[in-house]
Image (spheres, rainbow, N blue to C red):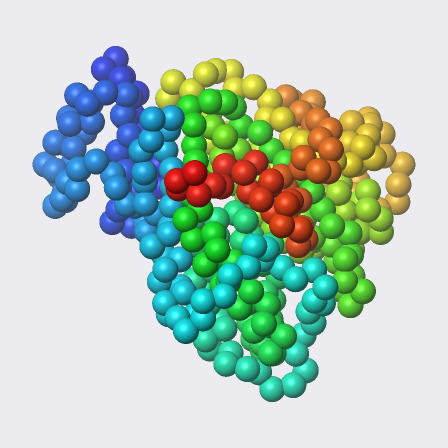
Length: 333
């Protein structure tokens, strides 16, 4: 829960999660007065300058901040992969095709625990894990040896990338989005995969990888569905920053980068003559966001689209390039 206070003395933002709170202010005086006010009404302990919040370590640098969960990576590896020293530079073996297990499950409880820990890590500071976690979590109820082989590779990748953290700089102070889709990559699965990521200050602030809820009939449709989902998140982010004191007003349109010219053409067209109702609804939604200045849509080449790893497994070079594009880098370079 977030609270904002803005007066002549400056502004203060309170970020509350259960019994943990961050206080951000424009100057020390208003922060101290806010703490004194809260102490007079609640039993609370001042932990000083924020170092760790919700299991995420905050590291201050000359250029900005770094968010890291390297200690949590250690916990995962020590708990579930202690006797293994293997490493991998990619998350997904692109030659491996996973499917539902029709036989007996293998160590289902431990598999589900690992998935839960990976989800917490992914939602905190590791957007690079999103596709792998989304895909492997589909088999939590009855994992096979093939699924265990795939999740072990993810743990090997974590050992290789243990020290990765999100590096935020002071610039650019604008939100940018990237959208992508992978159209029916598995012959046993008729639904495509959507992915998006938003950056601010050079690093990711919001991301998602998920199966699409409807069946896309073409690559263009799958990209269009992904673009619509990305637009929904852009609208929420824009409304969020509009409520932040001293954020430059009016808030400019959030630029969404897409590597499908056909999907962009469909989005910018004022007419839709197709018969698909779900595409018509999404077309109206995107047109509304464009016409009201909430978003703009720009072309990006596929090789430069950092949402690519949210839809499929990539080569070593592309994993490294997209991670850097999201601001995900080693703590010490």
